[in-house]
Every structure is written in structure tokens, then in C-alpha cells.
Image (cartoon, rainbow over all chains, first blue to last red; front, side, top):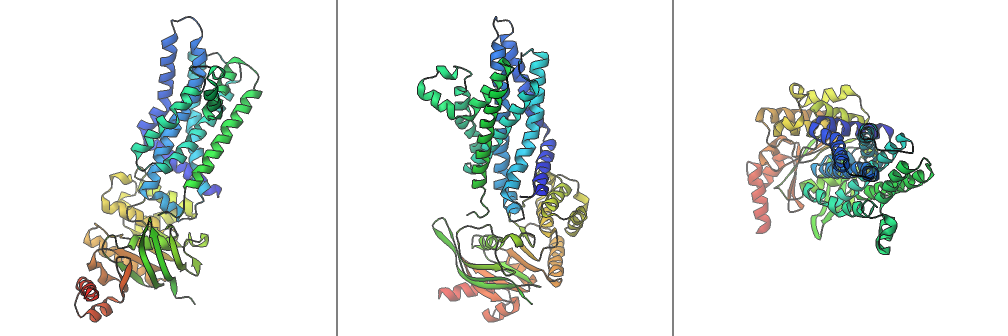
Length: 245
Length: 238
């Protein structure tokens, strides 16, 4: 692995994104619009539903968006011959993976900063813990999404298939992350499943930050998310074969 | 003094359950343009992928400059152009070249030199997606020239190009060979054969002829390579 090559890949991915105005706007603005929509829905109702659901959404957006973007872009690299060319050059697999993770991690940081600023600043989402930590959790989620996206891109032959992996891998995590039914109230088997899904920990971390000023548990949750992201990258590295059929 | 860039013995490749290359033995010398000619699907691309070290299912030996094909030390020394232009559609020609130059650790001036070498200076700032097919494959070729590689493996680099430009590129291949580069060019167009110093004619995963264009034509007793190809195939069938 070489810092020069990793940086070259991250810079290239960012240049490509900068070119693609539509994708960039969707990535940065859409989460803000959806959070505003959620706030508006509950605005006239009694209770603090927005405070309960908002943090979970802040955890989900970077995860979903980065999953989609990474799986499609790496699939393009695989099918377009550029990955083959890079693998015939002095590029390590980790350069490729970390290059992508860094680029999308940065985009996720901007995306989350915007969403968090909007939620806390304009929409009065109440946060007990430090606001910056909310962004750190969001970046962790984004890297997790990138890692999983990279991994599944190995199993898709077309961009159409890659997009279909989203409902298969992401929606179950959304359903079981504690957003609809608190995780402890789930049937035993589903609770066990929920315990091994990484998004559950990301949502736990976000909810912890909104309800309590102590950050110990947040770091534990964040460590679990990071571990899953590293495992995803390692699996992704396994699918990048220098020699292929 | 090593004169052979590539030395291959009993090379076979299995893809899926099918063997696509069947026990090849050959060498590729430095300082020559070697043409790998044969119909599409005969195994040319697979063979080239073996030489750059990205093909799986390989048995036998393939060495490039004395190292196993694809060895780490070779990745700076071998320039490779895949059949489909492998450059980023959403970046400009300059941005593509600058990116690959950074991966290879060569400077920006080298990127400019390679853009000039393939005559894309006028389109240097155009996004690749807006270029014609020929311009795109030249952009891809420019990447392979980065860092003055000792061997060039070019998979159909001249397909669909304007004849004038094709002539220019062949002249460039010969200039590079004169400087001591081993140039391997594949084509399914038999009329490009005459431009090579040496030919490997391929069909169904085996070589049916190996020699200079003149030798091959004389041996088959005909005046062009297409006829020679037919004569050899019919001779084998008989």
C-alpha cells in the first residue's frame, strides 16, 4: 500500500463526483429535504416523535447513499476495464479500497454536517451529547455503507443488479434497527438478528447522543460500526482479484 | 544480454471448464513489433492478459524480463491497453493521464508527452465521454505509454481508427521498438499483419504460424497474409 496511490485514487473519485453535478446535489441535498419532510409530518402532533426518529434518519442516510454510490461506481470500474488496468499497475488492493473509503468518507462528512446543522439548527432536534460526535457517527456509517457496497459489487454483473442489493441488504437493517419497534421489544429471534446487524449500533449511537450527555456507550457503538466497516473492506479486498477469468 | 522480453513454455489457460489456450511455446524479443493475429475469440486477449498477470487458470510458465508474468517488479515496466478503452469517461484526457501518472509515480510532464504522442493535444481538456471511439482508444493508449515501459501489450489498439492515424500509430510502435521496447500488438484485421516485424497467427487457442510476414507468405505460397491463414487452416484440415 502506498499513500501516494491511495491519495491519487481518492482525489480521482472526488473529481469524478464533482463532475457529476446531479449526483452531488442528490447526495448532499436529498437527506436535508427528507429530514425536513419528517419534521413537517410531525410538526402539528403532540409529543417528541421527531426527536425520536430524526437521529435514526441521520444514521441511515449516509449508510444508504454510500452503499448505492459505491456499489455502482466500483461495478463500473470492474466492468469498464479500469480496475483491470489498475491491477496491472503497481496499485495495491488496499490503495483502491482506502482511496474509495476516504473519498466517500469526506463526502459523507459534508453530507452529515449539512443534515446535522439543519436538524439541530433549524428543526430544533434536541441533542444532549456533543453535536460533532453526531457527525463522527455519520461518517462511520458512510464508511460502513461504502465497505458493504464495495463487497456486493463483486456479486453483481450489472448496475441494475447492484441497485437491487439495496433492498436485500439495507431494508432489513432499517426494519430491525429499533426505529419501528424498540429492539428489546422485538421477538427473541429478531432481537438476536438485530444484534448482529451493524446499522442497529449506528442508530443506537445516534439515539444515545440525543438522550444523554455521556458518550461512553456511543464510542462502544461506534467501535462496533467501525469493526463491521473494516470487516466489509477486508471482504471487499477478497473480491478484488488481480487474476480473474 | 537478454534479448527476449517474454519466454513462454507449455502455457495453457482454462476458463470455466473450457481450455482456451492449449500448450503454447513462444518468445517475444525486445526491439521488434510482434503481431498477434487471429479471428476474434481465438484467445488473443486471454494470452495478453496472461502476459500482464491478470488472467486466472494459467498452467505452464510465462516469464517477462526473467520474472513470472505479473510479478510486482514488472508492473512499472509493462504498459497494457485492454480491448475496450479503459479510461474514465467522466474525466478529461488530461485528468485521466494525470491520475494514472500519479499511480505509476511519474511526473505531469510525462502525461503531457503521452497525450502528444497519441495526437490528442487538441482534445486534452475534453471529457472522454464526448470523444469519438478512436479518440477514446488513443486516450487509453496514451496511458499505456506513461513512464516509458519496456514492454507494451496492446490489445487491438488501432480498431476503428482513421487510416492516416493508424499509419502514425504503427510508425510510433516501430519507433518504440527501435528504442528497444518489446511491442506486442493484437489485431483481427489481417491487413495490419504486413506492418509487423514478426507474426504469431492464432486460431482456436494454438499458433498456426510463427515468422516474419514474408516467411509465412512464402511458406504458404501465396501473396497475402489472409490467404496464407486460409491456406494453413485448409492444409491442416486436409
